[in-house]
Image (cartoon, rainbow, N blue to C red):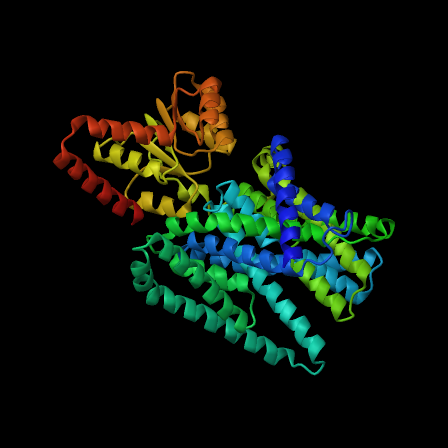
Length: 562
């Protein structure tokens, strides 16, 4: 125990030191965690040679990550992109496996090795993609939801593959048909139980637990662990159970509270996951696998996204959605590493193949992190070359545009949270000369029901901003607290019309001051705004009037939650 605690302390301290360094260089924190594992592992300093205890931490981190993803989703959202995710997910894995098998044979691998490698390349990392989507606030976008759906399909196929390999290795007489039938039946049981709990037990249990913040937190963790264990008992991964646990709570009014309390736990355990990934690097003959690793890495970084862009285009999505989705899945999965490790234990693969896939994993995860973080800039660069992947009739923007005229006095970017109150105020004042821009399909449908003029779009897309400029708005309000997006909005709109009054939102004082310097007319800083509002209330010193305001605010919260 003392040895483990010492190792954990060194890992955490090294993560912090390297984390501060990469933040100064404006790089993703994931890179610092992976480098920590490489430095402390058997490849360089050999401080940690056994990572079995850290494996448990990594599993817990992945479970918490997918639990939070589930909390931010619901069955309606999954249903919305379910068909596309299911079809494209199966086709992507199938096509990638065939292409990977051919490449494996061409670089000198035998049939069994090529098959293992091909399957390993077809899966993408749920943990990497979800974390980066959350960091970018893209989890609720259309491409974010499609990406999550594709990852769930991949995870199911990955688990099926792992169980199949284990079954074949343990029993050479296994009947694959019966095995598959049992697996499907178990999956149906798991989903039916999750849905039953979603409809019955959840509301009563969490209503009682919500009377104490501490009990609510513990109940949420217990719920996550309970379904994760049940999933494991059925032969699936704890990650799928944790995700379903989150989904069953998504409709409850306590999701934001649960997410905020569990997020620090998730961040700690996820950091250990990436450190553990770096620890997998062991000494090997680099020269013998350098060329194969390079070829396979290029295929994963370019070939996989290209396959997905084509499939998304054929499904009727616009080139931007296809490109961002494809770019998000340009790495191999943690399941890929487990698969080749299992292949090594069963005698199907040599240590050389395990090292090959490990180095491909680290390269693709590291490089794809940059690709995801800078996906919008990459899209702008490649946009003109992507037209061939887009059908004339798409199921996006043209079908999701409720702007009824060509001029608006006010444009509101972002209808979530703060934007909800602004839209309500404009609607109550009978002001019809405003347009709402949002990238969440659920919010778009709500705006459509309320007969509010809307446009489906993301202000990080220059094409969307250019279209907004054509409406010649007098006032543009951005409730999205992302510095780069607001800076792009300022630069583009001010080029079209210097007189447009721009409200933008900042996360911190530094961003607020910078946005003022870059040309914003007013920067909304929520903490200061809230303090000023309370000060305005206190000026009246009329308790009964403030109580009436409190009830109005409560009713607004209920309406927002609905």
